[in-house]
Image (cartoon, rainbow, N blue to C red; front, side):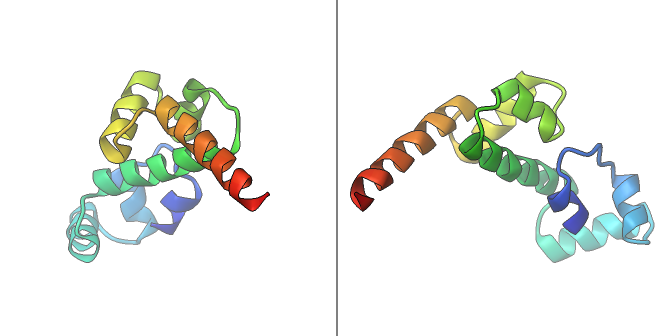
Length: 109
């Protein structure tokens, strides 16, 4: 899990993750699901969306660039996953973050 969180854009496969955990694929999948309550695919998608949200909030990188940085080869696939996890598109998320930051700055001054 730590490796995925540190480098969500890597080309993670179940085989690679199982090797990192020094387990067989079947044991890894069984333990991962039992310990986290989610599948490896769900964990990977959520990790990538969390990383993307941070990048969208802190940079001016395009959505396509962010998609690539977090491991998606397709901007549209990334946008679909992001929307399903966050409830809004990456562009809407960024606009919302900008509004929130402006609001907070207004409160602080």
